[in-house]
Length: 345
Ligand SMILES: *Cc1c(COP(=O)(O)O)cnc(C)c1O
Image (cartoon, rainbow, N blue to C red; front, side, top):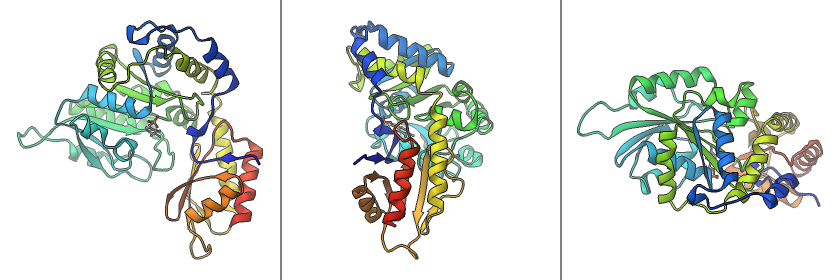
């Protein structure tokens, strides 16, 4: 039985082209800065995002943590959304490992934080307060349904950051999905930020890794932090080689994942008892609720039945599910998934 795995775009496996590139990768000791493949990947990534330099890190979590610790000192404060990945899913690393205080602001359903809320969160100069240092945005916004945040809003937050002399970091795990959804370049979306993290290991299909980008000075600091966190890697060119293939061949095709998500969403909307979020999908993610007035089961029970039919979905709360399209979900996989939903529900 073919398994259709819609839990996440992180389940993507490296393509045969990636495996070939990995096998042939030229490598060196990256802790000495001597891995030519890592150096090439970092440079490519920096150029694509319009930044001076890039740093290859094992995960998006380490990329965000390295960025926060490079921007902030002990007791400084970060302003971020209450549904942001950094606040919700990164084990509180910025506070437990970095002694950085988090100031959470309510995320709006469109993934933004209200400008007034950000402004109100900025601390005045008072010895009782932590020092506001950094604002973090997320694009696309995962918990807000994979929504993209547009350049206009980013520009407004950037002006605020400049006014109060704060740094601005983007958790751009899926920045290329945001760019594809908005029809703009990732470089444009990244321009107002002092630093950006993005993932190679999600929709771009690479097996491991993320890149943190920023100025030369910033990356110099972040490189030290990565070492502190135990993230110095040796012949990491084996991994970076897949990342290069990802940047060369996987970015432009992300629009296809968005088209498949639309097909899947349209089919799901026709099934009684499924309430797809209004406006969803806006990129490669579909969030839906099960209507318990019609259906005798909750999301976990439905997910188990779907699993038996070969379709894996993410359960995000009692009656809520997330489905994510990616490289391995073609039209026939969309059909298999829809048939399984019709049968099970
Ligand atoms: C996946 C993800 C991360 C973290 O990436 P990992 O490689 O899983 O550590 C950060 N932010 C967002 C929005 C993500 O979706």
